[in-house]
Image (cartoon, rainbow, N blue to C red; front, side):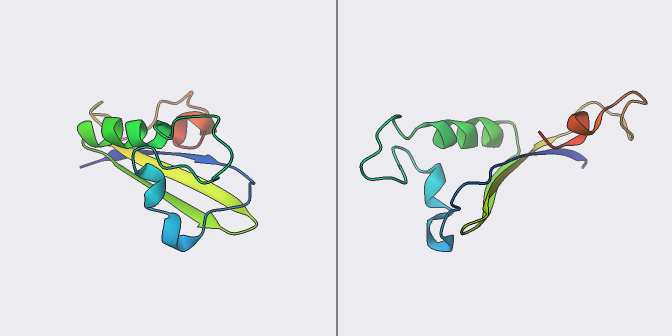
Length: 93
């Protein structure tokens, strides 16, 4: 089955390997003192992606940043991208 893969990257401080899966937990936040959100964003993303039959994960390097990836099944039936597709239409944001 074909799938669409999208990614979002940053150049932040990165995430230690032992915390990579925790970022998808409900109410989890990286900073103990920084409480700008509720810690639900990536939990909700995971729920939506998995509900559509996709996968979600994060890869990170300390001091270099992180990339969040997710896939969803390609239900368009097309075997190739449209002729006028831009690079952002093909999987990276």
